[in-house]
Image 1 (tube, rainbow, N blue to C red):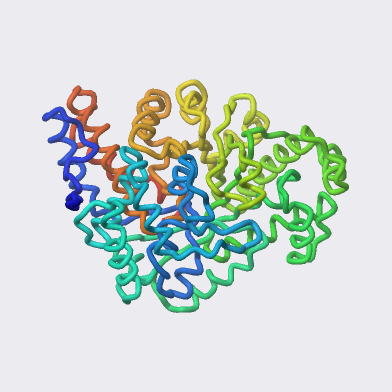
Image 2: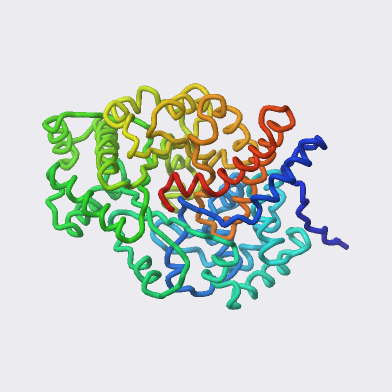
Length: 474
């Protein structure tokens, strides 16, 4: 007979095994553990907060949207259809969500030691009050406990938002989005602050599968002739203003590289003409994306929206999976990324502008100490985003601090953002970041590199004040 194993969350998780450092980390953490959550960049669905409808079941909430989870299962031979993951055409295999959950539970051992295990166990323990570990034997207990809880008012999206102590959360939308859900949230009278962010990738990347149709819709929405360079830029300015009016304080740009360019207007028009005619080569597409980043920087200086660049990912690397299931299905792979030369055209124009704010991210950790730390430690406009995506883990967070502190310090970074679709994991992710930062600061205190009262101030800065300031949320 299988006996269920107890699920616990150790109060000293992620703190040093050294007694001196652990004691300091505990004291620091006590000052940040209950601070409100600032979530300035992410991919939760605004429809959740607009409609405030109950989540359907455990599978739909915790498994289907979370590519961190199903990519691991897929790597071990579990078909996405068996998990109920939607296909590219919007259809799904006829899978009972309970059976999909059982398959997940039977394979939960694959996540041992991973960030996903930490996040999910935090959700199971803190949010749903579960006290036995998830495995094949406890699968139905988990499914029933979670699904029954989701049917109650206390587990509606707005109630969870308030329970989690979220002060503000930013979603991410395409320029083609009418932002109706954000309007509904504002009109509802609910006090939760849910804002949008401008993500123009579909109308910026000529190699994006939706580009021709997206560009056509871009023109229809704005009334501009977006097949001319000047009309295209006016359309961006118009939509940025619309997003800002809906609460946006930032833009986001997910490009294959960090390349920027500073073409003359005549050169830009010639390049754009090739793009809209469908005659652009891969080199032309890269140059166009590079030029648009510089144009976005110019617009940010005018309208005050904070600019984020998330470069360096080979999207949809698994062609067969992409054809069957579409984008964002766990098949994205990090790339080597260069910043010093890539950003120079943009920085030559705007690097010394104190009113321009550019937040850089990377999936190439080799750039932390060689490029990103020195750049952010010099240019007034530059700030470093936290360890992102594949490095959003205790080890990645520690490496980020260790490799950027000497050149960028703490205050040229922007604290933490969760960058997630998995709504219920947000408190867990922020808790991990706060614990790692407190452990890192405790080491500095124990080595007499910083006084504890200074470390306490920095801990609060990293958890709360820096993201608010960096994203102009205050």
